[in-house]
Amino acid sequence: MNTSNIRHAIGAALVPFVMLGATAALASPGEEHADGANIGQAGDISHIDRVIEVDLGEMYFDPGSFEVERGETVRFVLNNSGRVVHEFAIGTDEMQNMHEQEMRSLMADGFMTTRVLRHDRMIEAGRMHLDANSRLLEPRQSSELVWTFSGEQDELIIACNVPGHRNAGMEAIVTIGADHVS
Image (cartoon, rainbow, N blue to C red; front, top):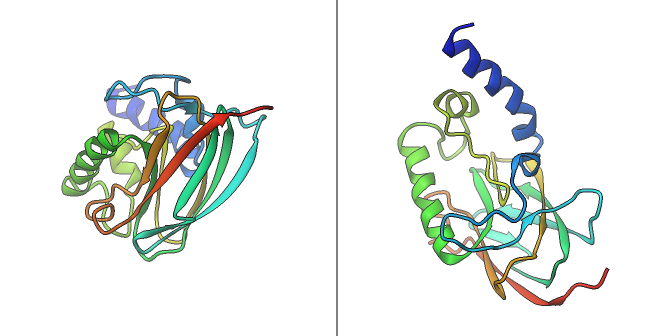
């Protein structure tokens, strides 16, 4: 099997995870992110404390803010009701700024447009969007993200880092309160 066939086989194996929004299974729990922030970790799907449905529309999240307890595991049920690609990404301001640059690069390099995600090209180039703390959705697509808010921050940002969306107001604040009691 040549290198190209191996890449395609690996990519094909990852597609079900990506399409079902199960990238949390590929993440390292508690891993520090690029800016050194410990923002929490991919949650255990067998232990969900709360479910929050989130609408990703044209330059908004609904609800527009979130309150969680430290240590709480939340299943976010995401629905892109908009006409363009949107993202739901949990992080610090610095993480969001760095991730926006990555998203600009994906768009500039033709891996996505405002309406289409080109997963096959992303996989082939080794640039698949596989962050445990985010989901990238095409119009009318749904996904889930399970997250445990066990990090050190008292406040995080949920943002859409598709170029221009966050600047147009597509962000929400997550306030992290007292320790969660199971």
